[in-house]
Length: 311
Image (cartoon, rainbow, N blue to C red; front, side, top):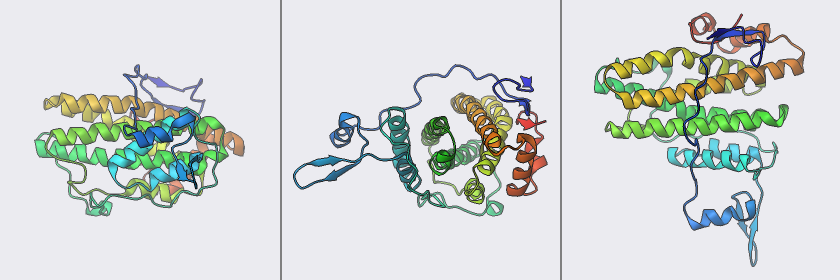
């Protein structure tokens, strides 16, 4: 669907945005199974307890504190659980709209996978063999792991600069990314591997680090370049997995693609909102920010058929 997107997407954004299919099932699941955590949710308060002299004292957390906790959680399963809990608590009004807690420059990372510079990464095999498919799924799993931190850093670092809906959107994006990671990690285990079995790189977070001081720069680079690029390349990956009989992975990628469409839309919405606040035109500002913070890769990343791009 090629469109000038003159309604909800604004007049400056053009590209092939496929229609979002109906969302299949709940995107979050219960975080707490033990009695201690259920106690922490007593009376609708935030899951943070301190022991007083003769009783438990319930302490309310802010959205920034919740996001920082996720960023500083290294172990993958614990990060997923923290992400789901924070997204649910925000949705249910258990977190305050406060931003007094700073975000770390870099999130915590598990011991594995080994993180290599991008130019030292082993050449990825084609997806035909099982080893090649595992390598590709592992790379996608790592992207989704980094995307969890990117989403919650966006909410916790820049939420104060935008209306409350900004945090609503990026908390939902963070919950989506946690689900994507969980689906791909489970698929790796079904194929006899696991997340961390192969090396990876931290290039996505390098982009976040470069734009940590500027909300518009972060929006221009992360959702409007990096995630938009996924709209272009994921359909071909889906067909590749389907062609070798891996329907299970293809279905996971279809779900991820559906959600990423919404993530790019959120990026467009808030980039336009930020430009309106700053009284600047979106198209030239986007081009300037991408050229400044994404090096010389503008034409390579934004001339593909499916990746949405300004006219």
